[in-house]
Amino acid sequence: MIVRTTDEITGTNRDVAAEHWRSKRIILADDGVGFSFHETTIDANSVSEFHYQHHVEAVWVVEGTGTLTNHETGEVHPLRPGTMYLLNGHERHRVTCDTTMRMLCVFNPPVTGREIHDENGAYPAAVQAS
Image (cartoon, rainbow, N blue to C red; front, top):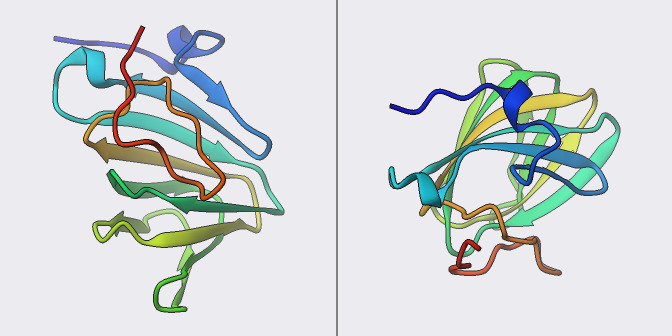
C-alpha cells in the first residue's frame, strides 16, 4: 500500500514546475503500478500547448475554468470543475486558463518524473529514473 500527501511531495523532486504550471507527481513509474498520478495546477490567464505522443492522459478538472482546444479537429471545449478529458488519440492540444486551474491527471505509460516537455509540448517515449 502506498499513502502519500501533497504536503510530503511539495519541494521534492516530485514537485515539478514550469513557467505557467506546477505538477505534483504523486505516483510515478518507480512505484510499479502501471500508471502515474499527478496534481497539476496551471496559472490563471495562461496558455499551455501540449502533445503527449507517447502517453495517454486522463484529466479531471477539480478547480478553475478555461478551455481545451483540440488542434487536430479545431474543437474547443469548456473546462470547469467536474469536466474530464481523455487524450486517447495523442492529440495536440491547448489549455487556456481563465482562472487558476487544478487538475488530477493519470498517465499511461507512467512518467518517471524526469521528463521535460520538448519544443512540441511532448514527453519522450521513455526516460529512465535515476
